[in-house]
Structures are given as structure tokens and as C-alpha cells.
Length: 185
Image 1: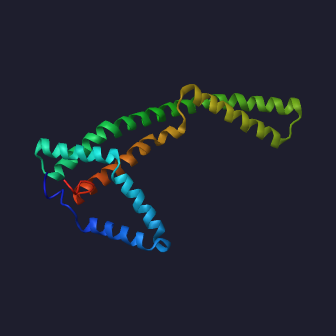
Image 2: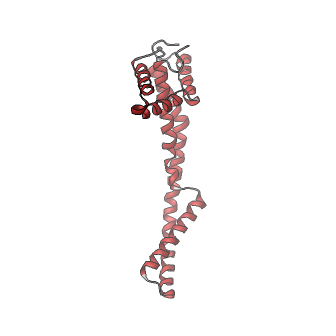
Image 3: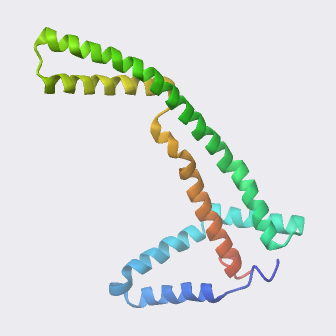
């Protein structure tokens, strides 16, 4: 193991240990810090973080590249394997939504004509007609989205995939540089 990246403890590791000691010694004032440290330590020792650490070590040990280049190679690999497919899927959903918007304009015209006809036939006032139009257009939009399976909330799928990945890689790098959770090895 490269001694530069897997040193047993560093100043950053000492700060985390010191913060844990402070939080444990005065729970009233630093209770939130103890909770934060507990959550952070459980994430730092989680299976995905350990796997990413193994991946980073494997790339470094297998290729013999310096650590900075090993990190870049791992980044390209992870972005290609995880982020790129999510970006393609997000673009697919966005394209389907754009096609639905054009179709929805025709549906809106039909609903508008139905609303005008119902307003005259049933002697509706303006607020009732607007409520009917709004209700029917919402129903029609939901039907189109369900039919094509492209809910607008799926547009954040890349962020929901990339953010945890970024956090796990960052914590993995922190663990490797401070020797945690493998300080005994």
C-alpha cells in the first residue's frame, strides 16, 4: 500500500477525533455534533464507501499510476458507468416531455371548446368555467404522462444518482488519505 495516501492519521483525522471527543464530553451543548459525527462515521464505514476505496486501491495497484492519475481514471470510469446512462435517460425523458407538450396544445384547444360549450349550455359563471377547464386540462396532462411514462420528476434522476456517488467517492478519498477505516492494516 502506498504510504503517502494511506498514512495512519493526519491533521484532518485528528480534528475528527477531537470533535468526537468534544461531542461525547458535553452532550448538552454539542449534541448535534455527536449526531452528525455518528452519521458521518456510519457512512464512512458503509459498504459502498469500502467498495469505492477498494476500487481506487485496485486501480492504483494494478496500473501503477500515481494517485492523482488513479483518481482521474476512477472518475472517468464511474462517470461513464453511472452518470452517462443517467444523463442519456434524463435526455430521453426531456425529449418525450417536449413531444407531449406539442400534443397537449391540441388537447387544450379541445378542452377550451368543450368549456365554452358547457358554459353556454349549463349557464356557468366565469369561475366555474375556469375551474372546469383547469380540472380537465390537469386530468388530460396526467393521462398523457401516464401513457408515455415520462413524468417530469424523472428529470432529476441524474442528480439523484450523481450526488450520492460524489459523496461516497469524496468520503472514500478522505478515508484513504487518513487511513480510515483501515488504520490497523
